[in-house]
Every structure is written in structure tokens, then in C-alpha cells.
Image 1 (cartoon, rainbow, N blue to C red):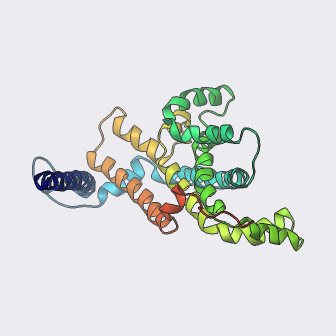
Image 2: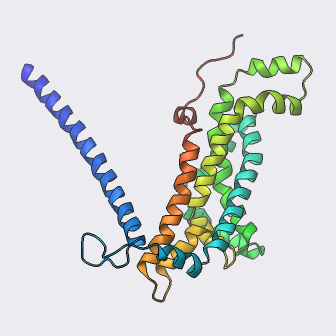
Image 3: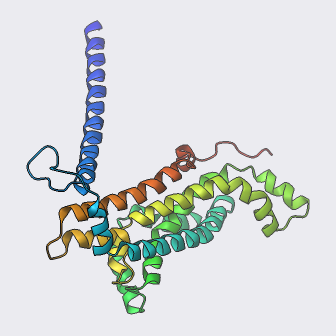
Length: 283
């Protein structure tokens, strides 16, 4: 009996060590890849040695002019903030309706909203792009915005529902008793309470849209490419390009995404995104 217990403890410790070793290996590998790209973007020449022959920042200037990063950043900002605004306008009321109202087919509607998050974007991106091109929106800025709304609106609904469910419905009932209409109750009562959740959802939508490649790639035209699509073309397009210049563009993309991700994490409580309020209103 004692030997069995000892073996079980040893097996448990080995499992814990194995898991931690795998996590550490993954993190080290990820950091090594990022460090290699960042180092290459500042290297004058780096071939077959541990460290570059010299350091320079001219590749960033080269990437800015060669890839027209000013135009790309403007398009990226336009797409991202349009998607964020429309996702908030559509997603927050939908989340409130699903969290507070009971109606026939509610589970089916919820499933339809969550499907774009469960299915890989490429599976519905191709038919979506076909429809957009047939209607004349493919290759335009609005086509890219509409394509990105397909996963982001359900994402806002998914994030906002726990925040709404954690608000006691008696607060809304009390506001209505004192004569507050729906709009006034939302602006003066619900909005202040939901503001952390709204900020969290919209900031995560912002990061998600910046990183969304498949849908943007399928629907973007020459004048509606975002930074991530332009980076793909820079890597795989024909012609000779300096590796350091492409790496500099990749660093700019990583930095822009990381900054917004750090800001988003300051507003996000992960437990609020995956749990539901346990308390039931008093009867």
C-alpha cells in the first residue's frame, strides 16, 4: 500500500515536471523567435554568426518607404476603429437581450452567434468573400469592415453577457419604478456599470481585428490592405527584398498589436469572461 502511494506521488511529480518543462520550452522557443526577428531588424549583416556584424536603424526607414507603411497604418486604423464602433453598437444590445430576455429559439440564436467563433474563419471566409465581390463590396474598405464584423460582433456578445448577468436586475426594476425609460436607464444606470466590460470587449476586438488575417486577406484590395496582409505580401511576393526590411515591418506590426493587448489586459478580468453570475435575484 505504501509502495503504491509512493509510486502515485512520484508519477504526479513527474507529470507536473513534464508540464512545466513543456511550458518553459514553448515560452523559450517563442521568445527566441521574437528575439531573432528583432535582432535581424537592427542588423547590418547577419549570416552564420551568433551576433550581427553591426547595428543600424535604416531598415525601419527602408520598410516605411518601400512598403508605404503610412498608408497601411491609416487603412488599418480606419478598419479597426470602424469595426470596434459597429461591434459595440450591435453587440452590447444583443448581449443584453440574450442575458435578460427569454424568448423562443434563444438557444438557437445564441448558437448562431457563437458559430463564427467556433468555426475557422477560412471556412466561411471564402463564400463570404464571394458574396462581397458579387455585390461590389469586395476589395473595398467597407468590404473588409463587413467581413471582420462577422466574428467580432459575436465576440462582443460573448464577452458582455457575463458582465450583464452580474448586474442585479432589481437595480433596473428600481429605476423603472422611479420613472426611468429604457434609454435613460441604459445611459444613467447600465452604462456606468457596464463600462469596464464594454472597454474590455472593444479593446479585445481591436486587438483581434489588427491580427485578423484570413478574412482581411480574402476581401482586401490594393487600397484596402491592413498591416498584417501587407506583411504577408512582403514575405511571399516575388522579387528580391532585404530580409532585415521585412523583419522591421514585422516588428512594427508586433509592437502595434502588443501595445493594444497590454492596454486591453488592464481592463479585462478573465474570470468575468468565462463565468456566469451565480447569485439569483431575491424573490
